[in-house]
Amino acid sequence: MRPGSSGGEKNRITNAVRAAFKIINLKTGRNPIEVLVRAVENCAPNEDTTRIGYGGVVYRLAVDISPQRRIDLALRYIIKGIQEETFGNPKSLEEIIADQLIGAANNDSNNFAVRRKQELERIALSSR
Image (tube, rainbow, N blue to C red; front, side, top):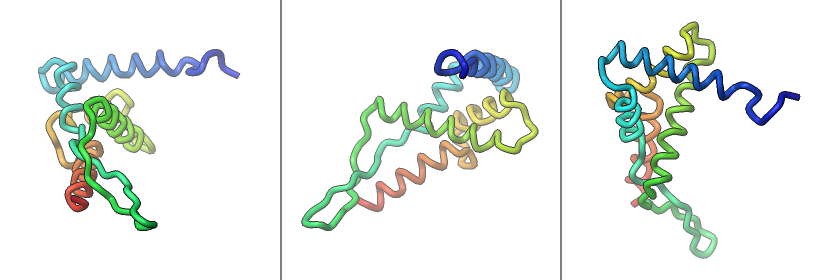
């Protein structure tokens, strides 16, 4: 068994994110933290649905999302997009992280996190 809960993964991922920030700076010429903040803003959904049951019948109702949950969902979507893209891809992890963050910051509809946000808001819109 590896020592600690991460077993060395935290250091590897920290170095990968640091290298990805350098790639972002070279590709865009912008501050990588600014790109990260824009990515989180563009991937954070405004509305979600919740289940409400009346007499055995379940309805979906659109509700606003709290600010902290918006950030949590945005980061989850970005990470999920990075995970899906790295699987079977010859590109390095650093390049994929940089591409995903740049795509999310530019509100690119081909980006996984932006697509998930749009899908969640579309479902919430239809259940108003």
